[in-house]
Image (tube, rainbow, N blue to C red; front, side):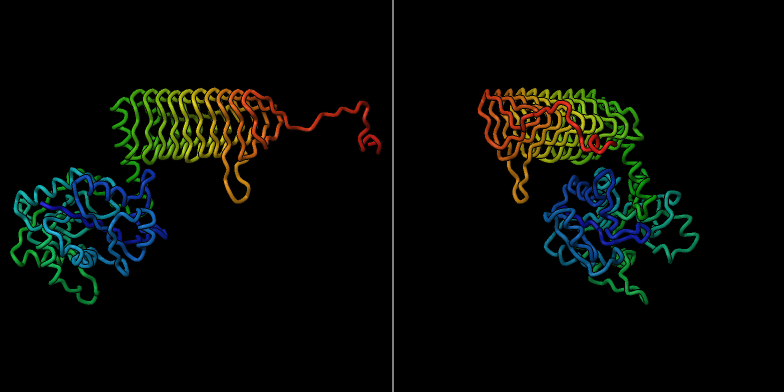
Length: 457
């Protein structure tokens, strides 16, 4: 049976005090909305719509144009969001999963359980429910021992007895599309408020004889929905503990799990050691038997096995096996290295290709540069890649030796086996095997009297 999904990302919670919708707040380097999208896709939902408020442009800029967006003129209740999506569902059949965009701990297993329960019992709708003792809010669910729901009561309308003795709506639903659209067609705004209540949708369905069931959420942490910064921090901590625990069970050493942050899409090989203060985000891949950290940030990059990266940042780059990086190296997007490359302290690389066994030991900037195998780059070397308008490439051949404090003014090529003398500024091609020296001749004036000497100071 077909399955589609609606993800609700309409609101800016005032407690967040942010210009961004709550669903765009990051958890472990990834917007909460991205977790919801990934979870829905893991369940096989297609197509998938994101219902936004006035900030559609912000959402699409961060999440990308490949998603389907339904925009509301202002942030409203869930009932209004579903009503706005009714037309989009007109050509769909089967079931629709409805979930909030700010529930990053929700699992695909929980969604599948909700979907399977609805289908197995022939229900028109299923609601993920939370035990009263785990809930401080949400619409109240009146249900019997068989989890058949007889009423959904808005939190503000519930009596104290109903709040104390009944489960709460966790904010995740599965509807039959036909039954949902039929109920939405009868939906009217709440008297005096002008709002369309989700509880009223369930009331319409129940009055028509539809079967609505509750499905317990199980672990209450899976339905955490942060609406302020404190809850956001708690949510990130819960997810961090789960991810870190999984990697330690899979053979990765975390020297200080409380001070190690690993995103949900990161992959780490066995026997790798992650030291404190390390942040691994995006789709990064760390090979086996590496040492990463301390105080290192790697984003959307791959690190080959047996490598060491310490006190450094690596962004959107690919490093080969047995690389030595840091301390205090900055590897910017587009850099690719082969095996056994050394990138030492206070080295910055941007869009570079470095071949087997080459060394950039310290105090160097290489931008838009190709470095052959077995090259040594002396301290203080700079490739001058920008002329104020365009970027240009520097090519250094295999086995070349670049002396300290050299400037290679791109576009320029240094041939294989060539040597550049320390302190040179190279503006023309250096042939293979040649020595290039481009610096002023030294003059020594014995017994020279400085202006201070002549002034008697």
